[in-house]
Image (tube, rainbow, N blue to C red):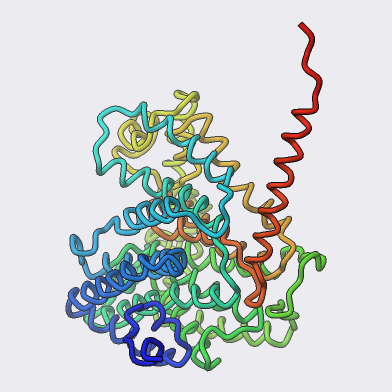
Amino acid sequence: MFNQYCQPDVDMFRLLEKDSWQIFWIIFHAALGLASVYSKWALVAWFYLVMLSAVISIFDRAKLQITIIYLLAYSMGVEVLARGVQAAPYIPDQLGKYLAVVLFGFGLALGGPIRKTSLYGTLMLLLSLPALTIAPDYTKKQIVFNYFGPLALFLGVIFCSRQIMTFTDLKRLVRMIILPIFSLACFAFFKASTFERIEYGVTANFESSGGAITNQVSTLFGTAICLMILMYLTRQTLFKLKAVDIALMAVLTIRGLLTFSRGGMLSALLAILAVILFPKAKAVWQDNEVTLRNIKIGPILISVILLSVIILGINRYTNNFLLYRYQGKTERNIQTGFTRKVDVDEFTSGRWTIMQSDINIFLAYPALGVGVGHSSVVRADYGGPDATAAHLEMSRLLAEHGIPGIVLIVMIYFYPFYRVWKEPNNFRKSTMLVFLIMGLTATFHSAMRTMSTPLLFSFAFINFVPTDYDWRSHLAIIKKTDKLGKRARKKKLADKPALAG
């Protein structure tokens, strides 16, 4: 009795997931965003408190796996907010890569509920290794900057494929992702108010993003919006009060549009459309706990009207520059009124040229590419801007990995959607789509340099099951079947007649 009621709960994630504390944590994370405008130490102190709590929990084998997943999910928003407040070196710029590789590796070393190792993740890891051996003059910074993102993805897929989480755990996981992103949105709002005037133009806006990298901020806002809409589509509320869900979604949408970074917002739209339009499973394994909402014209019409009002209001506030940004117009178009065909390279902020140079590098070095991180060194020789890092992961894989990179492209960008197609549960199918699309679309503007891509991609491979599903008994049956199968194969081999002579 004493342990249950009197012992202090030092597990911060147990406190974060408590339903009765939801409003407190929303207010707390809003205050954290406000405090971060004036000092980085509030964020640093809070994050290390969360880290310390997680380290203590990790030593409890019963909490190990879920603590790793929660800590990494929570760190996505913290990493970008830390860049905005310039918290390095106390919270490193490459925090996500270090943390994901270490924690996924540590978790794999200690095992998981499912003992079978993912052949899919292991094969991707092996295919990526040759390119590490051929690029000259490697430094620690190059390896971390260019390879730790993909490495975290490969280890994450292997780790998450061995994990089992209930639908209730998934809902809590979504909260862990959203709370620090909400802090980031509040920080961006309060930080923007400190400027006398923000000049909006036809490029991404750093001031309205809180001074952080706009693409990363926009991607996180889009991810949070997507997950909240997924909760709605599956008849769930993320927080106790539906009004809180609506208010959070409105804040994130407004802040996301004001970043003027198109990637995150368009990716969110694509993910939601995919969830709605993707073919549904034919009741192979259905579950009464979570069901997809029937899409009716009324709620869709109301949502479109509200979104239109928000977009029109922001467009007016920014003197039509929001519209110009999404149209891909340049300052010259606006000043002269001259309308011409949109230049692809201008519309993609130079990424088209970078992609073409990556293809040229691949054609010159098709076998194994030029090695991890070396494409930026030779880019100028193949028609690209000098010393520019890769921005598209798909073309980077070609340039730096060669033919193994083609296989990796198929495995990363196409095979997961085959898995989605074969998934018999509609909720898991929808969850996989959101995680995969938001993770992969980020690779078209930031390659795999951000923490969100490897983590969201990996989370898609967690085995989510109904809350009352007896997965331990199910695993026991699978293990027993595997043992019987092995014995049968051994007996069959033993019964084969020996070859003569």
